Each structure stands twice: as C-alpha cells, then as structure tokens.
Image 1 (cartoon, rainbow, N blue to C red):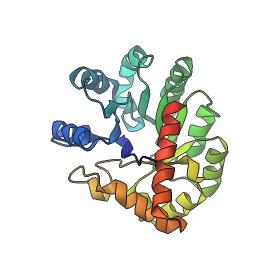
Image 2 (cartoon, rainbow, N blue to C red; image 1 turned 30 degrees about the vertical axis):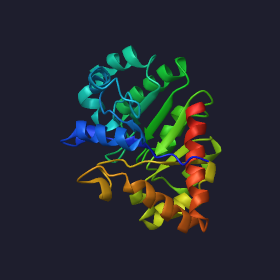
Image 3 (cartoon, rainbow, N blue to C red; image 1 turned 90 degrees about the vertical axis):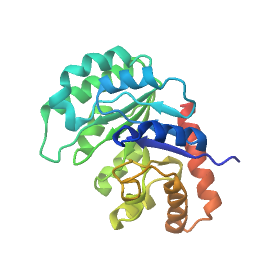
Image 4 (tube, rainbow, N blue to C red; image 1 turned 60 degrees about the vertical axis):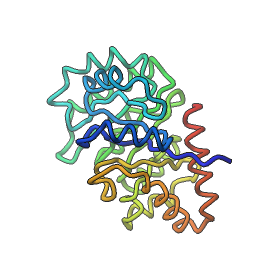
Length: 242
C-alpha cells in the first residue's frame, strides 16, 4: 500500500517563515492539519491560503487563550459549519480547574455535534477526565487526543471511548510516553509533530520527524517498520473517511 506522509497537529504559523513551511509541505506532499489558537487567525488563514492541496487549517480556540479571546467564540460559530478540522481546542488545568475553559469547551463541542463529520484535535493536559466527560463517546466526529499525558486509567477510558491518539517524537523519547504508546491499540495511532513545541521542530519544520516516529514505534512494538508505516497510513485514511 501507499505510505502516507502526514501531520495531524502542527502550529506552523508560529514560525517566522510560515509561507516557506507551506511551500515545503506542498512540495513534499505531506498532508498537514495546521492548528489555529484563536478563531480570527483561522478566518485570516483560510482566506490567504485557500489554494493549497496538502495544507488544511483547523478552527481552534486554545484553552490557555480562552480568558483573553473568549469573545472570539462568535467567530468560531461563524465557521464551524464549514470547517472539517477543529483544533486546537480542549482543557488545560496546569494552573488548576478552570470553569471558563470548561464552559467554552462545552460550547465548542455542542457546535461540533450540530455539524458533525469533524476531525477534532484535543488538548487535555491535567484535564483528561474532564475532557472525556464533555466529549463522551463521539460517534459522529473523529476525536484525536493530542500529546496525551494522563494516567493509565485515563488512557484506558479514552481507548474504550474510541478516541485516536497523535504521537510525536517527544512522547517516544520519554519513558512514560513509550508506556502510553505500547498500551494504545495500533489502529488508534496517528502522527503529529506539535511543531514547534517538540525538540526536533523547535527551530525549523522538517519532515524527518515522520521517519523517526516510524522507526521508534517499530522498535518499541517489536514490529517490522514497513508494518508500522502501513498502520499509521491506514489509520489516517480511516480517520479521513470517518
């Protein structure tokens, strides 16, 4: 089968040379879902970069920016009907439980459920249970828990709910992260860079991270690399068809 290059979660607008990143992605034919952190950026980017084949922008409102940009939820509602991809959204309780984040995320998920068929990349740092309480078992949208860092009990709950998990190089380079990957059913594994927040993407966006994920996953699961490449590719195609 054809092995796909793809990235389900990247923030290429945080590089100084976003246009160069887009051109690189297009020339490399790597399917890339680009997160936005506030809806106004999504509105701008789809206007400026609508012509591209491999770059797709996701409509997002990052939980850590909710307090500052909550008023932009109206822009989110304006575009949620037509946006296939949603992200980055979710909850971040690093500083403690945040009721305003909960209210906004609940509103976001209600909107996505009204216009289903979405692929949603979800942030759940120190808030995995609350995220799952809000999403539940979403049969009409593809849920991706990006850079999952919860407990094994929370991981099992997310697996039982049928979510996908996007894996980056930092996850595969940490002891806990490797244990997480080993526990996830292989048909729920996806690739992400979370550029520029991983070590290998800190300074520039380079698709070498994809081969690194293939190799490290194969080593971790004691499986042939070709088999792992096919699994990651099949999972992405299944997600797109969901």
